[in-house]
Length: 326
Image (cartoon, rainbow, N blue to C red; front, side, top):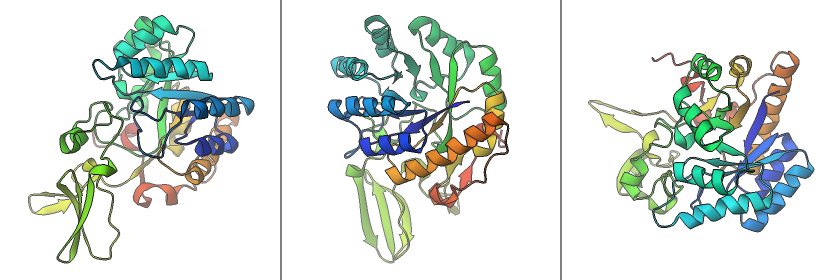
């Protein structure tokens, strides 16, 4: 059976994911060492140790995301995070930075190392380099590959692959986004924040409500209409004589129906995005995917999809897995 790797943005979400059937949960410390560094999210050191103990007591693993890129001169913060993850009993750390991978391999050789999607390793040469140089045991593949491309990669590597199957999408190459840092000075890759709330402002202008990020107007909606959060790559932009979602529509990834194909392609683990989501959201998505992976492993038909109401804009896509736009 493929491993189901589930998000835990808080201790409550971790418990909900474990109870709902997660084989593993991924989470991070409450600082800039992880790429979901938002107020009210993440774990203190004590909470991490308690979360690992709870997961292990219920047969689940904990993977700690330390997946931002260290600031020059401040490497100690990231080094401490790796050490503290091991002390807490984590089953693996999810890393992206070359220097941090080297540090972990040298100073924490018994701690299993996974390569974060932030590293954007998308071909056998890159993946084999990380495996040979740093002992990486699993790579989280970027969301730019078809199922056929994933199968081809798996034939030429000797490490596990993990792929996203549900949750938010980004049009940028993983780990390479500069939009948020351009608009706000803070980026997901360095600071762990994308389109941070501290830089969001709404203003009534005539009959419209303008949603801005870092001074840039991202959306205009009629008064009384739902106002979306101003995420840069999902904004409505004017292009020629048309106004629309030039980069990406508000839509979520849902690859439930591709689970058999992903298993055949040699994928080891399925990842659900959503560390910013509520524990109720996490529990429902995890239950649905646990039923799906069990059905696939047993050779039964997949259960009926039930997650449409939880997708962004109540719309879903298989993203690049089918890549009909190539």
